[in-house]
Length: 348
Image (cartoon, rainbow, N blue to C red; front, side, top):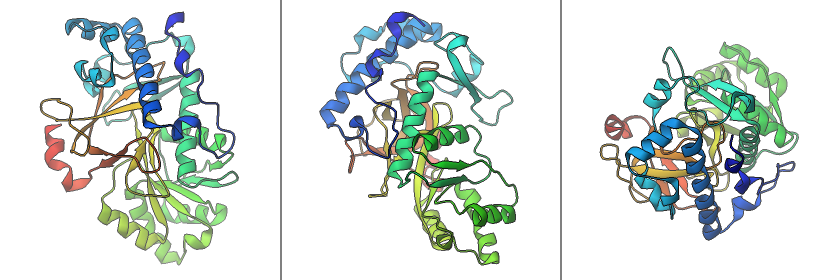
C-alpha cells in the first residue's frame, strides 16, 4: 500500500478496549461524528481510487475524482458496488493492499459455487475486534462472562472471538448439531450470552421445553439475534418461549459480520449503527436515489476505515430505514423482515 494512503486519520483515534467502557467516538457529538465521517470517507475514496483499478475506472467513467467529495452528501454522486462485482473480480482484484499485508481471509457465503473472498489487514482486524467488543458491551456483556454461539456462524465466529477477548469474555468454542446436545452444553457451561439465528432458536425452544430446562435458571441473561432480521411477532414468541430478552446483532458478510451495529440494552428499538466506521444510506431500489431518514428503502453501506477491501456504496439488498439515535449520536437502523420487506426487496 502506498505510504500516503495509510489510514493516518484513525491511527488510532481509538485505543483498544481493555475494559468494558465507552470509547470517545461512541459518545461524541453529532458535529464531531460528521467531521470524523468526512475525513474517513475522503481517505476511503482516495484509498480505493489509488489502489483498486476497478474503482478508478468507475470513477473516471463518471467524471469523478475523490477530491470532489466536499461534504458527506457528495457520496451520492459515486457509483455503487454489489455482489455481482464481488463475483466478477473474485478472488483478489478488488483488494487494495498487497498479499503480505492480509492477515485473515474468509469466504462471504452467499450460496454460490465461488463465494466472494473477504480480507483483513492487521488494522482491519483491530477495528473488527473493537467494534464487536463495543457491540457486546452495549448488549450488557461484562468481563468474565461466557458467550456461546449456537451452531455454526461461519466467519462470524472469528469476529465474536476477537471482540470477546477484547472485553475479557470467553467464547465457548464448541458446536453441536443436534438440539439435545446444544441443551447439554448450555447446562454444562451456563453462558451469560447466547448468539443464534431466529431459526436456530425456534429449533432449540421445543427441546428446552421437553427437557424442562429454563434459560434464566442457567444464568443466561441475553440472546443476541443474527444475522437475519427478525419480525416483532417472531421476536415476542422467542422471548416468551425462552424466557430471556433478545437483542439484534448486525453485520453484513461482505463487509464485517458482526460489528456493524448493535441494538442497545437501554432502548431495544433498532440497531445502532457504528457510523464512525460505516457510512449508511437508504436508497430507492429502482432509481438508486438517496432517500431521507425515516423512509424505507435499500440499505447501502460504505466502509470508512477498511484497508484490505474498501467498499464504496455497497448495496446490501436489505430493506430498512434510518432513525435518529437515542443514547448515541449515531443513527439507528430498522430492518424489515419477512412479508413486510418483500415488495421493496423484489425491486432491490
